[in-house]
Length: 488
Image 1 (tube, one colour):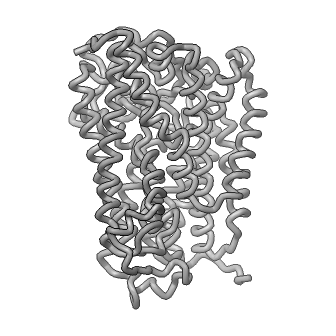
Image 2 (cartoon, helix red, strand yellow):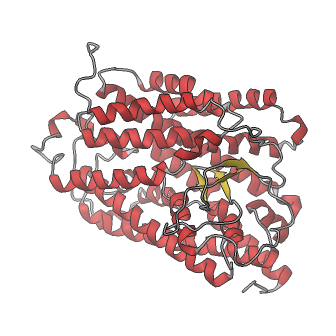
Image 3 (spheres, helix red, strand yellow):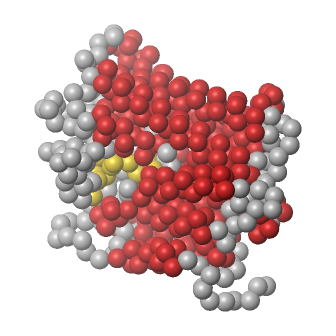
């Protein structure tokens, strides 16, 4: 047992950011306006909650102002905004059945606006597990050659299937993933995509809990507090996550929804700086501070090792890495002048940027630690590394306030699958179900230690169905039913 000590070694900025999590979570309970709390009961055909987020914008901003808000769709792994008006508000909306309602062609989000939001939707903390996928089959730098090729190929295939959903929306007028299925394949089996989306959302929350357990444990070690992974997760869950998941009004969480992409950008920059500095190489500044299993390890298993069956681990992880297909109908319905061509341009740009970011983070992590790359790559970095500490704080803040938005997707998905009417989704019923779900998610996160396993398992099962199988079935059925009639 290490002796407890004070916090003089942690940088002041890191200490301040760490305290921000608890301060902000406390502030989340204060009333933010005189408006009614967000009502998340009436979801129509949606298998997950649909929320609206409005983000700031100026005359010369990258975002464009809009006359009407657009949804922030809660789905497995992310909470995604896809608009940018001039105020910041979080409100609920029900997804109507029977497709999108007509709107003025001059209204809606621009292509750059949609590209930014879709990239933010795709690139989450799960990218930090990809170096472990490469380490599963290789330990030489040349292993990155087939790995990068896989990243690009899966990204291309995922982008194509995302485009297929947009074409189905053009033919059917659908405005949600489930209504796409109902209007093309049929409403009798629409529970299939609903169940798949709920399952994937649950897997995302398990991954969130695992990342938060590892991240806070490392932060506590930096502060001189030695807690086990299980104790850390139970502490964070009971004091921070549980109160946030029981909130009925989620408006106060809106300002934190944009931290995800900023935190990932900062983390990628720090990983680059540490790689080029060589601080983790043999004899480097932080090499001696690493546990034996975290020390960088390289061998001779290079590009040819991709022929090993172990490369399937990376393949499974990548099959769900680009998962944003839940929200493809939302992006289509909100895109200004949403012709098939414009939707495809937005899709191509978004997935190209995401492929580049995935390849960059994967390469930096693997080139730094090689075979020793952990399922969550930030676990490889020393607790005495101030850059890594700030990255952990940034990721922790982002995940803490994304967690309840994603959690709502599980809870409302369960209600929806059980056909619970809106009138029965009372605060008491929601609280009881929230406690059961959070207990199950936490139990799984305590049992499973390898983040890459959760992501690869999710990708190998229903993740593949949502990304590849369902879009192809919906497009085939829509073409058979409507012909190749598409809105131009």
